[in-house]
Length: 430
Ligand SMILES: Cc1ncc(COP(=O)(O)O)c(C=O)c1O
Image 1: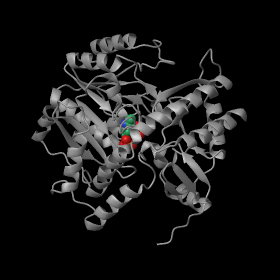
Image 2: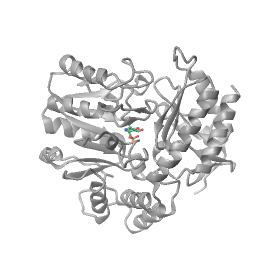
Image 3: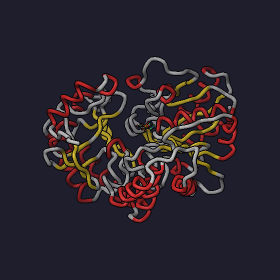
Image 4: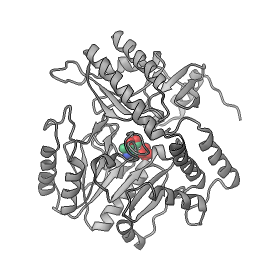
């Protein structure tokens, strides 16, 4: 099979054969073709090296083409590429055991594998509705939970919401410390949950979905006390607390394996994907046994769920995370990068806020620090300048005014220097 690697031909083929629905989401003004990845680096078709601060949309947790992950998947694919979930295979069974062991102790965790994060979100929604017998769900404005119709219905950013979503979802204000409608803190946002349950639902709910740190929403950390308070209120209304760890999981925050663990709260259902497979398609719902149990009444089948090749990659990811102490690295290197971002803020007026923890960081760009008006145009310019400086970042946030940095967890202190210098150059050119 011949592959034409030229950028022009690749762009022409995409333009000709991709549907409009798959063509809109392109980052740069000019196309880029990636040919190779290693660790935290990417090379384009012309051989130019980039630091990948997006990790291919947060999927590449332990480094591009990590030898151990590739070997585990290749070995499995050579033996039996796929074994559909109705048959037994030891590799997904091992991964289920290993994932359950990563969850807070003292609870009986069970696992359902899917192909993607959105499928896992759909399943978590169905599981919560089946378990509680209630229909209404709460979600946060500026949440992103995925592209399927059900996942869109709990996504609170209009640019990702299309016609035909199912209903029974009420949104509450996101507790955004920088620009939340009630200012910083948790309490006013918890009061908003009470008000919303009382006015926009039947009063009995199936649950609430919360990203422990919002990703596409622009790296919004949940303030202290919020997750606990939300879980209490949701449970008092008959519902379940569903933690979306698709971006914040697998050690990315540096402090813990899961983002919710910074908040001394245990979810009823945890949704994971992306970093679990280091790029291999894999998602999972991990739930308390009694929460998942009522779903035994009907069939639910993802053809590729528990695919052994992806699950072999998932097992290797867990091993590499441990062997290479990548959570510790995320904490150490993330703290160094955050310090450099704060320094940039002190020198560049366009930066309104820097935030995040571990290797989940962001710069928010504003027209004016007093008004905090989001500056989409300047963000796009800095983003293009970053490309010129060899940095791949992400434009995020409802107004596309946030530069999100979520690199592979093997980013090094030396890379931090390169990133800080590149960003400095990019802002200086404005
Ligand atoms: C927080 C969060 N949840 C769910 C999803 C959906 O995952 P997927 O794209 O694998 O369907 C995403 C994807 O970006 C996400 O960021």
